[in-house]
Image (tube, rainbow over all chains, first blue to last red):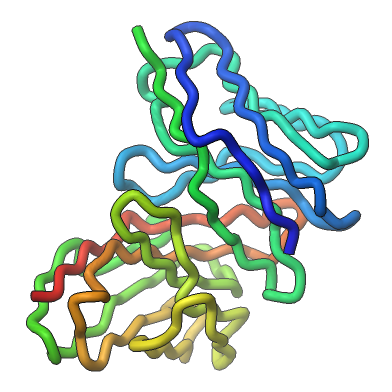
Length: 111
Length: 115
């Protein structure tokens, strides 16, 4: 299974873009990159996922490098409600696609 | 559309007691999962199911059992509760393993304390 590496924590000013990096250097050609977040002790919330191309939805943008060894989640205008732990996950092969969670990045959005 | 519903939300068990955590989804998803999350840690997979009648172990299955008799329901059974099972339990479901429209939806969790 491809593993991911994320910074333990990051700060962002309210209203500014939050750029959360993730390394997944052992990713295989047909594995997707998924991003989830967990606000306080709630259930994780899906944000976005992608394979090769950059993706955008109403919540965020996902930028995947051409070699697919890293990606960046972008929250374009962070708000205080975006304070959460953000998980970058490569969907596992051979395990029926289970989501394997690491420790994620604790994003703190400050006024 | 309720999504993934877990019951109960909170429970206190005594050591050696048994209980079943309920999980139901109304999205007709084939894949369902049970995770546990200890304080300050990420989620660990306990069991998963790829369809009715099919279940398999995840990372931390010891002390738990599951069944999947219907598409909608995926209950998690604790037979002999131990303090090490004090955790928050999350159930999730998804349409498939990966690809378009395969995001997982999570319930709001069951907070279990074993004393």
